[in-house]
Image 1 (cartoon, rainbow, N blue to C red):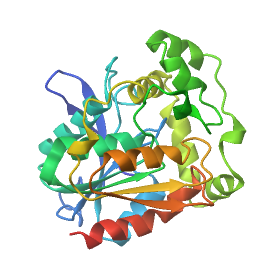
Image 2 (image 1 turned 180 degrees about the vertical axis):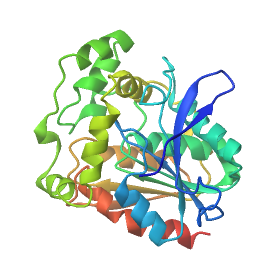
Image 3 (image 1 turned 90 degrees about the horizontal axis):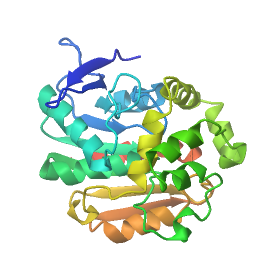
Image 4 (image 1 turned 60 degrees about the vertical axis):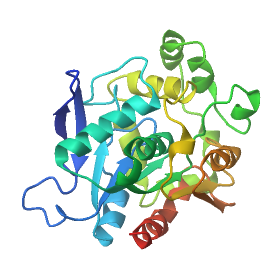
Length: 280
């Protein structure tokens, strides 16, 4: 596993990041950079399947733990754009000029926000089962097996933290294909999710608050090629979320995977990386 490193923001917060090309003698130091945005909750570590697929294509991966997750100081009231701003600051410190950006689940909004903030520096953006901006409609929750955390976030941070005290994972959130995937190469995802919440619920709670609040960026500002990948059977982030994002993104296309769930859709990661590489 890539060794975590620390970055200090201009405001004095500590931010943890991971860089597969971080060593001075690393063979991928000068390789094309993929910025990976983790889901909710996770640590930000570059988990094995992501590292392997990227390495097979000669990509260097940089990933940043969002505020409130292990190693990164909290930033109550943060927006999606605020967290993406931390990523951009880390990239600046690393001297990374151009990059592609990708996020899974809760990482999807942050990948899009980074693309909006970075402008022409972002060569491509991909979301895998990414959540859409909250539209103040009850339909936004339709199809979610367990929307309790997001609904609690609408009442504020204290309500979301209180919800976390008794919340339990709903096994119906995942499909049979999801469980098969977690029992295979993507088992590292489940283990990392446990580590991501091990130090408390702040990161996950603040993520949920950011998702149901204004993101701080206009998706219409994302002018880089964008790919939305969505599982038709997803019970965590249902398929209409991808359709809603497609309407807001002027340069996007949608790959619908009708049989895939929230986790099993990640098995197309390699194909999406090929799509990104073909744009260079």
